[in-house]
Image (tube, rainbow, N blue to C red; front, side):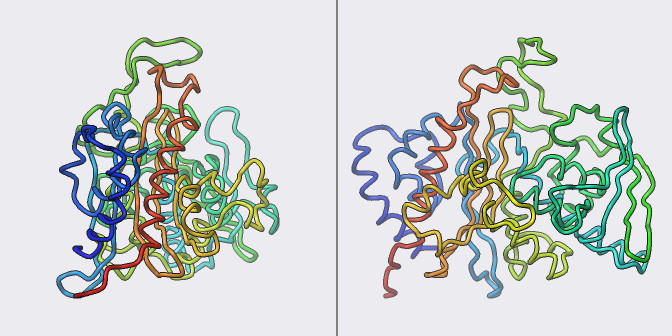
Amino acid sequence: MRRRSVAFAAIALAGCASIGNRSEPAGLADTGEPLRSLLRSRPKLVRALHQASAQRIQIVLGFVEPGADGKPTLSQVGYRSGAEYFYPASAVKTFAAIAALERLAELRAETGLAIDRDTPMALYPLFEGEKLEQVDESHRAGGTITVGHEIRKLALVSDNEAFNRLYELLGQDGLARSLTRAGLAEPRIVHRLSESRTAEQNRRYPRIDFLGTSFQHSLPERESPALQDPPPLPKLFVGKGYLSNEARIDKPMDFNSKNRISLGDLQRGLCKLVHPEADCGGSAFRLEESDRAFLLEAMTQVPRESKDPIVDPVAYPDEWGKYLLPGLLKEIPMARLRMVNKIGRAYGFSTENAWIEDRATGRGLFLAATIYTNEDGILNDDLYEYEQQARPFFTELGRAIGRWLVAPQPKKR
């Protein structure tokens, strides 16, 4: 840890000099190294952190390094980590993808059938107004709905329908089992995205058929029991008002029933995917290596690189789903970068969970961060400062990380 701290401190000198005698943001002086030096290295980051409490900023930095027994081990250091609730939005989709791939392996073992991520699926109507779903025109390989294609859509363009289909395959209970097995017992993924459903409706799941070339296997419509109530978190009420059915409710929005996960757990989960050989806390995910490689490829690509589905690069430029990328590219050429990540954005919250690696130097780190930007304090009005405040914040974080990845390492003494 000492050599990394020296490197970060050297990078931070220019930034600290320009800050002058301004007081540091609350909590920064007590933040552990090397995160403290990374944050100090960009004056714009320091200025942003003066609003850290109001904007619910949290940051966790992680490294994989030899542990006491020599096994690679994730070490984490945080700034305001766990200080209050944040809404993870689409950042939880990675865990739905992992759990779905695990579920397919279970089905193969249970049935002896060749059910895999390319097996076509049919999802039957569950709620009023729904229809049988078994066609996906964005899937160039046959136009079918498959777990693999839904995973690529949620990784490349954060497709909510794709997540919801995996949620219906797994259920709250299936997601909870996958997370708990991996030592991530506190996260809760308990509702569909972009669908207004009651708590009871979010525990109901449709009949799903797997339609192989020589078999059909049906999972019946079912309902799962309610999960145990979660422990309390600070500041689960957000904003000063919200819109509901076009009416304004002048009280904070209650997030007690929403999805939740800590930044530390987001990062530990990504660590288990990127570095399964490491001790990331708890057990490994039960992923077959081919499935792990498939998911990593989907989470590494930018939309224009996808051949299936085809994604409009104008609507989805490279940085659309990689918030740190603009800052990273100021320090590292695109050809040298490897970035495995998943973002989330909703209700004014923007979250990034990433592994960033410089292929040339072989140096890499994990970065998970979140920020809340909602100056008028009203949720559901679509007036959030995502582009004006959240994007620049992540750009500065990306630049600080990129500068460290390419910085010369101090010589050993």
